[in-house]
Length: 409
Image (cartoon, rainbow, N blue to C red):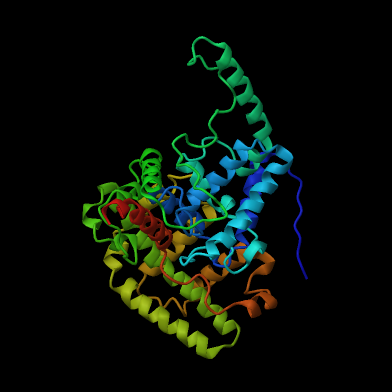
């Protein structure tokens, strides 16, 4: 049975926010079981602005502008604008599938039935990196495109009749929706397309990162002589040369990741017991023992010296709102971790903390209270180290470096 959601919305910003939330339910790898996404996203945004865990390849940052730029060149009007853009994005899937490099293709499995298109996934990055010049959502851009055309016509008429070509009228919309230095649209695009960036395209993207993300770790890494394939950002071979600010952010991110991994294992352990799966419960119990030995026992002095006040200051330095309930949950779990006298897989209070957190987030869909939800549980939810989009950033940087180095190959 298909579930449907409806709501009344009279505010455009609210509509955009709701659509982003609903889109998360279509992402198979969304497993923020304990509601820590606001914290991890805050740290990731500060380190790698504009990136996302669902970004796959860097050239989508050009594919999307090229599609829209061509529609604007043809002056496609409002009623057909969004639909034609969607058709071109779906056609792009087939073009990329005809190449040898198919890693990261949106729609590789679903084909033209793909639910979420690249333009929606990359829109925030296009704005953050200054490639899209207007301060508005994709949906609003679609809605005002006719107004943009009209104001351009007025501007062009004014320029023709003005002796001073620099005497521009001050309009409500910028005359350039896309960055004026955007590389030219390749011949036969999107009928023919590939992920490999040209040197010119890579330099354009590098300039955008340097201009819009100045001082970020992303900008620093993009300007290194080579890329790296470390498992974590704090394991990067150039870590010792990172700025003190980046080292501090990464230090807090690493400890948070280490400490909260135990809560995720506890969650899975409790569900395995609830489902009466002794073998799976034993597996998670062994994982917890390893975590306890590697993190809780080995780094207890570091955890005890960890400044939570500073951690929360850093976590609040972004647009992501960390709720009071999330703060209490994290602080309470850390208190349990610091108390080495307790076995956290048998301590009622520690177990209850994790259980109540999931129930408060999922409500009637909690796996602790909803038998159907428990039966649908894969056995492994929200596990692993938090690496703050690092895997996705590595792919984007690799694409960038390959393009930048074309002139030396």
